[in-house]
Length: 180
Image (cartoon, rainbow, N blue to C red; front, side, top):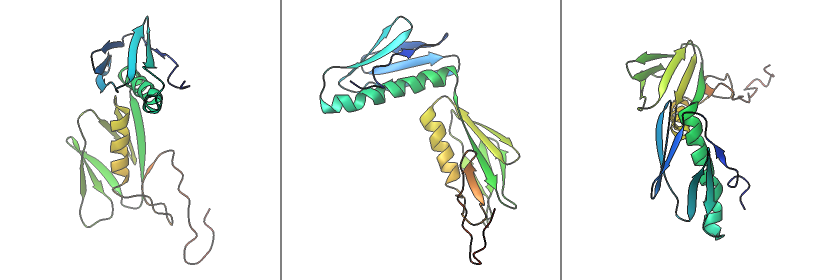
C-alpha cells in the first residue's frame, strides 16, 4: 500500500470536491481546478475527507496511487491558500518592469526581453524580487522556471535570475583567489 496514497485529504472550510466519471473538480475561495482521474484509481469523499484508493495491486495502479493523491492534495491547497514562488534578479543594470500583463526584462542583452504571463498567474514586483502566485502549483512552478531560464545565474559573479531560496555555488575564477 502506498504510504502517501492511503492518507486521507482533509477538506478545509469552503472547499468542495465534485467527483464525476473520469474527472475531479475542486472549488474553493480562490477559484476552481479540474483533474482527470487515472484509470485504475478510485476517488471517494467521506465526510470532510477525500480518500484515494486503487482497484487492484497491479504495478501500474500502485505507481499512480500516491501521484493521484498528491495531485488532489495540491488542488485542495491551491484553491484554499494558493501557491507562491519568488525570484530574485542580481546584476548591475538588470531590471524588470510590468508592462500591462507582460513582464519586460533588461538583462544585459542588446534588446529587452518580454515575457507574456499566462492567465491564472499574479505577478508582484518589489525592487529586484518577482513574486509569482496562483492556484495551480504546476503552472506557478513552470512560469518561475521559464523566467529563470531567461538568464540563469552564472557561477562567477552570481548575475542572473535565481530563486530566492537558491544558493549559487561560486567559482574562484581565473586568478584563483577565493570569493567570500
